[in-house]
Image (cartoon, rainbow, N blue to C red; front, side, top):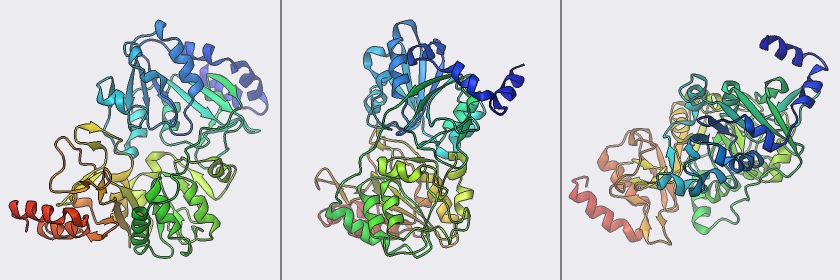
Length: 444
């Protein structure tokens, strides 16, 4: 009977009446959430804040609701310490709005590769009862786009018992494998507001500019790129404006990619896979970036289990994966998700892309980091990682490490050779200390 209902709603014209019948308020929609449910929240700039606020307003009626999501932009009202008995967050990637909750033990952190999350959800390993989404308005066939964020949310929507959608008139209509039919929606809450933006990093510092210049020297015409957001990635992209026929296959992109396209450097015509297309799974940026995404056949959003699959990544010739680190020890172990025992972010797609780029013909997996932190008082190249630090990328997976002081190539090198190469790109103020430590360990 349920199958017949879905089929009926998909039929030409009939979906409109069903859509109208599903329209409601945020307060009424979230009444579908019960104590003990696991609730998926759309990530990034798609954060469905109105639904979260309505859910939190019901807190007295609820107990033990797990709220699951990746990094979200904007508030996380469910993480208020006063609501700990009612909601517990499950972080698949920890952002600034949930960092305190995770490190104070009020929320849980899950170390997992981004490529593996959709299967975890679809298999029931991470059961999802309710999905809270923010979507574009339906097209003439009744399909809503996931807009600026697809990542793992399609898998969550397919697995959930109940799908509650904010349908935002201003959400871009992204193309690719990123649509959901209104027949799959349980409740619809219409809104008309700007999509949450993530402001650009601003003008690059001399350190970021130096890193950008060094990384750019490693990138050829026709390379396919993956990188994150922030001051260093933006500095790298600005250094590539004279390249030609670059491609993009990346978990996410921001305004810097739009600038690269406008400079004429980005065509995707030499990509080995999905030629002539930017392929990503979500966008974090400003309205400029969202406008570029809207109805643009040059951009395809696909789920994380495709975009981040190391085997898919490896099929791109000249795949250049650029990822950041918090610290690297002198043997090449990379900490990217924690500061000592304190969780800072997550695995994301770093290991996915480092492995994939390493298997690419002509590929280059690159780690970038400023040589110091805390205004130059702490070296990011260290003798040993701080106690409790997580290793996101193993030393066997590290090829290039780039700081403002140079490029260390580690692949196939011994511990002794790695120590020499990494100390050479550390800040000069810390090199003697690092050499002495390496000697004590008989690495030098």
